[in-house]
Length: 125
Image (cartoon, rainbow, N blue to C red; front, side, top):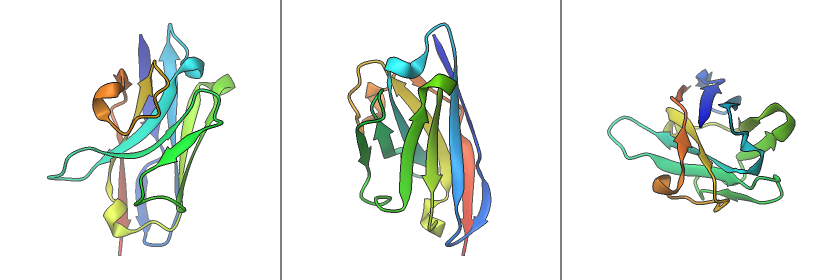
């Protein structure tokens, strides 16, 4: 079992930056899992943001965040990060991290086995 806890959300002005963290705990460490970030705005479906392989050597981004967001990980700390720069009001959402046992770097929610509770990001214009 894996528990995921996101942190780092908050209120920021457009053009600003935030770094989200996703800390994993439990009997199974995430160093062999692919990890992903998703987000969900009010009234919308949860959408893919970024994913990273277990080694950190491969990453995958949604077109809407490419060039602005960077996903990274520190397996020694069982933590995954999402650095968000040049934030826009449309980036406002609850951000969730997910863990995928099968290293798929998938944009599909159902291919993730574990989820955190989310952290709120609000970008003001």
